[in-house]
Amino acid sequence: MTEKVLVVPRTELFLRGEFQGISSAKTKETLKIVEKKSLFMSRAEAEKDPSFKQIIPYVTITWRDQIFMVTRLATQGEARLHQKVSIGLGGHINPADAVEGEKAWEVGLKRELSEEVSLEGPWEPQLIGLLNDDSTPVGSVHFGLVYRVDLAPDGGVTIKEKDKMTGTFFAPEEVAVFFDRMETWSQLVLATFWPDFVVTAPVVETSTSS
Image (cartoon, rainbow, N blue to C red):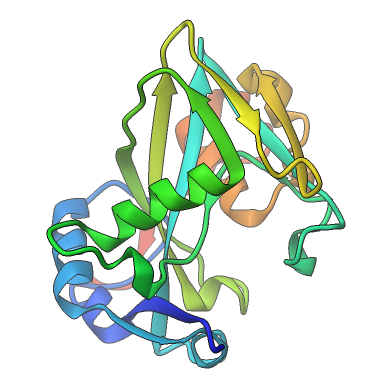
């Protein structure tokens, strides 16, 4: 069966101008565009067509000022992420996530998290930015909705897919040691929201038009 994923035409998504990196501006406006202009198309087609952006919820989990960091194992299906370090969890939004009365990307976010990890205690994802990275072929066809989940002091995380990844909480300065091994999106998130701990210069938000 052909997998279908949620996409938005690039021209609609960047109606007010494109940006590179992470932006905290116009988040509500962008979500409205995703809600009104999105559609489902074959993932195989979407991966080859940069005129569409696949919408990806990307969630960072924090607990007691620490960041949950995972290492993708070679057994994971996505070969380009093997042995990569990540501080973001998430994935594609599928037609099954389009529940009436709900926002598909929020349903997809919770589904993806529930497939990969078990979160202890109450939690609520907070949208903290939008992510666009057109510097790579992979990034040129994806668009991130960056969320943060702050767990309660008595909360915790248990990995479900132990055959695909390992993970634990680290202080930001400990996470920064692995910067060069991180997938690009995680580098962007760490450099933007924890810039004091990143030796590499933080990514500066840029725009091609006003």
